Length: 458
Figure 1 (cartoon, rainbow, N blue to C red):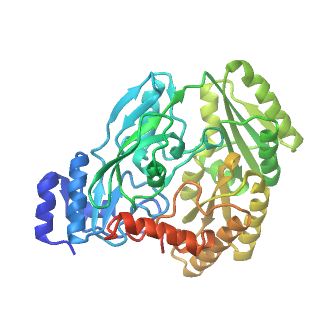
Figure 2 (figure 1 turned 30 degrees about the vertical axis):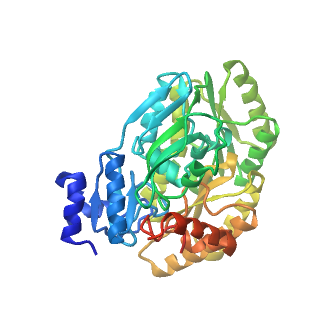
Figure 3 (figure 1 turned 90 degrees about the vertical axis):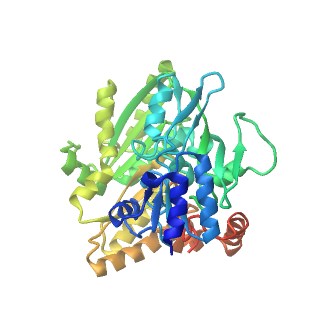
């Protein structure tokens, strides 16, 4: 329990205006996009790395849980103070410190909004590819902590592939620098990779060194409509077999499209049960030829209709369906449980069949959309959270979904992390030995278990 004396020490670090203790203020930091809520004892808003270090040392001194937080947009409960304690909100560390055109790198603080950063580097003809759906409000530090991905991962990879180095405050308050500004580095253990995806359990990221690439010269956006999700999924494999790696290759199934159609008034061809949204980029001279090959792959698999955007405005219209998928469900469903799974790309047709079986078995509506190009699906279960029986069926369905995912050589999280909500299922994916090794690392770096306790490990 936090005492008045401890609060005075925290006030001495960050100042009275940056220490929140009233219930009205604390409730804003009690939940994230996963929906579960736990009240913290206090919230602190440090201004720099030095203040973060002092706060961590105080938390160690009094054995208080410390929960790093950015935008709070995660879907796994990763920034929820499940053990109460102190939320350390990094919103004041929000500067782009450097953009280096010569070396194609940037240095940013953790609460720089991802979409803002992308816009700034693109003004200079540079490109930061990771593009989580939440990019307009999620932060660079949060993306790194959860190992976020996005639609462009099929061609360009995920957040961890663009982080060259980090400044981190360790769980005991030391400040370390991992990696650096060079592309090559072979000096001991790769501490950068260890920290990326650790969900705030091994330290607090206070600075990121980001790898950039040149901005592609051209882009072309297409949609294709199919009578079944399996036809669409087979098309994904055929496009890759044709030696084309699209920038994005997104799939929306019939239940997703039904919500989008009602919400956006979107016209769909008759008999449509699935849609692919496909984007390619690169040299404008080859984009037409690649688009032709993609059209052929779609027709081979029975596409009902194939469209190519003629300009940016038309491309934005095509993207409305994908961007509107989750909001449309929230508008017309009483509630939903969202899960993030990933399987090998050629196992997507099998996963879709398994999802249909699970839906029938538990008498639940399941809608899927996501990054078919890299096998990452966002599975949404329609539920009324006030209906106890329905929630119980949904919990059993989630177990079956994760079981099917592992059987198909996939992973129970592709880009959202484990956090609190998926911790009970980790043993489905990892052996006791593997989990034991992770716990040993956690114990070695965080001997007092103050850093984001209650996450990853059930």
